[in-house]
Image 1 (tube, rainbow, N blue to C red):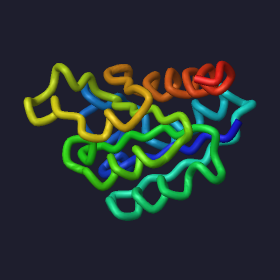
Image 2: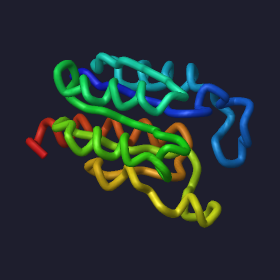
Image 3: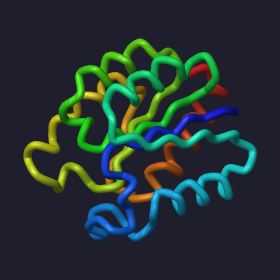
Image 4: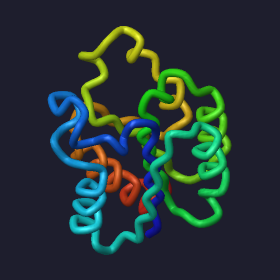
Length: 144
């Protein structure tokens, strides 16, 4: 099983940003947790603050991966380009958010990209990623 994990803008600042929303862990620590918890999964991790770069990565994903986890950060609320790339990508896709978006500002209530994924998980900090991996494995084993 090969899973691509894409992290969008400002997620390279985890561990520094508001810990009440995003947790205490850095992005590297979240990646280490995933590898340790799911040692039978081959992960690739990418973080980019650049929208077009994320689009390019998504466009190539289905050739090499069985599933995709994306935390688009602020692009979740603004990026039609990422939404369209996700729509065309035919592997299992789960959007994750560390913070509980339903308890956040009004502008965070519109999730443009999530509708192009198989589902989304919000509010469980690093466990959002853990749940997404579990679901990708499960959905791939049952043929969705």
